[in-house]
Picture 1: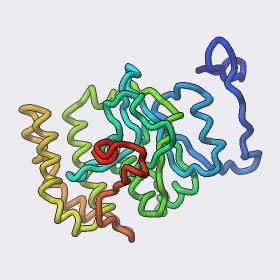
Picture 2 (picture 1 turned 45 degrees about the horizontal axis):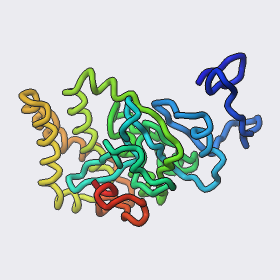
Picture 3 (picture 1 turned 90 degrees about the horizontal axis):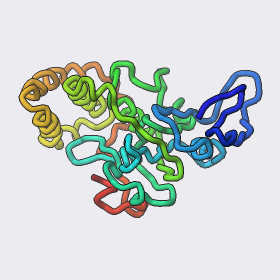
Picture 4 (picture 1 turned 90 degrees about the vertical axis):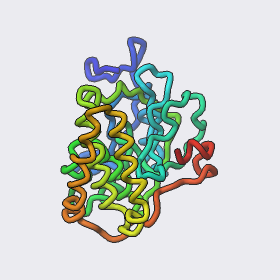
Length: 262
């Protein structure tokens, strides 16, 4: 997709069809904001969401670099307190044909209603600057959920993800950033009682990531766990902390039980 002489072209064959925007002059106050770290498969599929008045926040089906496997179709949670991608590694044909509910969306390719982002950022920041990378979109999804917003994945919108270039270059740093930011997210959005009850599983998640790193992974817990009390002290706890891990039943997702809450 490219712009040639002020026309947006899908390919050499023709232009992308134009849909009129509701914003005309004055202060720009769009109803939707798209966060795209990758390109949509077609201009039509990427723009279709803008014309749907019922959309709140939604995810795309994001394919891996090859286009043969799903990278993510939204977020789910496991019992170790980790946000995990829905349908990760699945064949794209396994995705439902109709929109389905998810517990959160990955900012790799997402559409947010502007009103929702305003609700989720009472202190003026949509994303928490302390995160730098990883889990900042998970934290945003949890804040949106706590404010009463819901999420859906529209399988008609397809994007292709080349992969995490930052993570590929620095796998150890990625593991540290992910682990630290997961604890920031947990402490800011979940009740202390849930975290205390789930503590063994939360710690096992860090140890599992440490094992994947091999010998270097021995250092991971020592670079993460001592920071947890400081994260707790520095976390602003707003009302409405979650008392259980977010979940959507198979009936609402249209997915098999194993895929809905893997």
